Image (tube, rainbow, N blue to C red; front, side, top):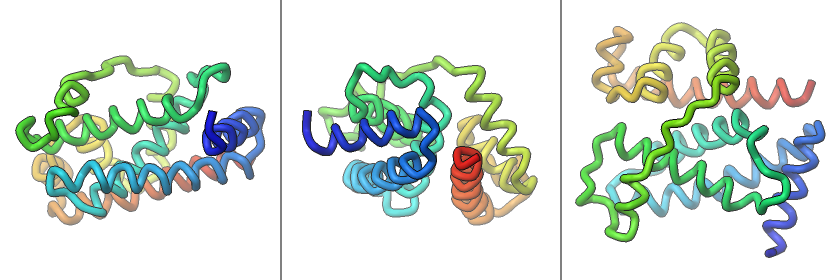
Length: 185
C-alpha cells in the first residue's frame, strides 16, 4: 500500500466514524486528484476545465451518496477510481462523444455501464435538490439525472443553454456545500 492510499483510507475511515474534519480533508484531497484525472482524460476528446470541474463535483457527490457501500477491508483508491470512471463514461455518453474520439484502450470502459441505482442515494439527492432554486433543480435533473443534452435541457427548463450550464455548475457546488454542512452536524 502506498502512503497516499494509507492516508486517504485513514481519512475515509475517520469520516465514516463521524469525523467531519477528516471528511472535508478527504473530499478536498480527492477533488484535487479527480480534477487532474478528468483534465487528462477529457483533453483527448477536446473537452476542457469546465467539463472536468462538473465531473469532479458529480464524482464527489456520488462518493458522498455511496460512501456507505465502501468495504472498509479494501483499498479506497480503486473504489474511488471506479466511481470516477463511471462518471466519465456517463458524461461521454450524455454528450454523445463518438467512440472513435475515445482512446482505443478505453473503449471497453465506455461500453461498460453500471445500471444499479441505490434507492437511499436517490432519496438523499432528491431531498437535497429540493433546497435548490427551481432553475438549478430542473437543469441538474434534466442533464445529470435524466441524461438530456444541454440543448434538450434548455428547452425543457425554458432557459438558454448557457443558463443551463451555469445552473448545473452552481447547483452542483451548492449540493456539495449542503452535503458538507450535513456531515458537520
